[in-house]
Length: 112
Length: 118
Image: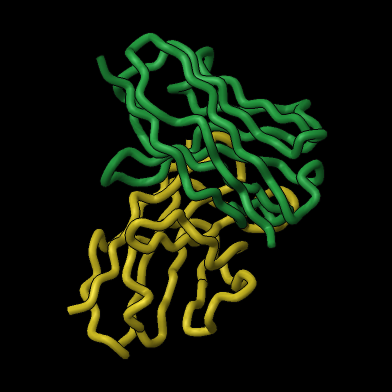
């Protein structure tokens, strides 16, 4: 199985400052079709998860451009350029290269 | 508006059964894989199962194989999760999610709580 490891567990951030979350996979996430199926989800308190980024760096419809994804192979990063109050929540990376689909343990973004 | 409306959660005794439902609207349900994902209280996300557009392929996490069955009725735009032999550790919120063409969870239901307790 693909083990997804996120760091840090928690990220206290000042409003308007950047935040960065790392996700590492135990194996390469490059599929035989050439795509890398790594996504990022946001879960605000009391809400279901919401897709932010897919295939490493593609922003989903309606996602603000302060969110960006990067990386390749086994190492990936989600960046928030300027954290806003509505960005508070838990962020998860997930791989969809093969079953079982797996998630990282989550990173909690909170305001200092 | 695209949405997934879930129903069917509740309290069940260990060893019991429960069926979750997820009604899709606002998109062509039969064109998408669908998923169930769960989340224990205060914990992270765990993928449970996926089903292909026509129901011909199904995949499960090891911990539910032989106990849970994912199914769908494209005529009713509905996804189901039949859960048998329930255990205390199955106590979680269950989300249905659309598994998009880019292999992502691009639409989520609001979740339904299943509590397994005597």
